[in-house]
Length: 87
Image (cartoon, helix red, strand yellow):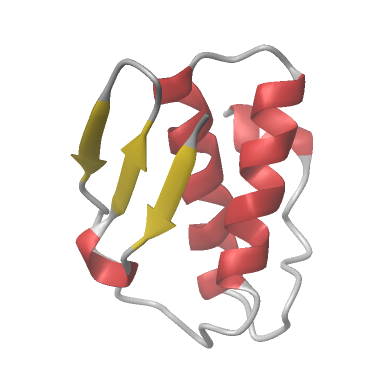
């Protein structure tokens, strides 16, 4: 019932039963590696939906998880935790 397509620097396209749109991504200037960013996006999305956040907040948290991972040299950012995502 929900589709999310990550578009890299272009943002995220989403589609639900009643809405669809494109959420722009903030520019990333400190990307160490793109490895793991998609996985982090999905993890952030699952986390936020499990917490009961709405669609907009869930996409924002998922994008934050991906940004944290992009800025880290490893595939899983050490700062990737609930407190960072909720900030």
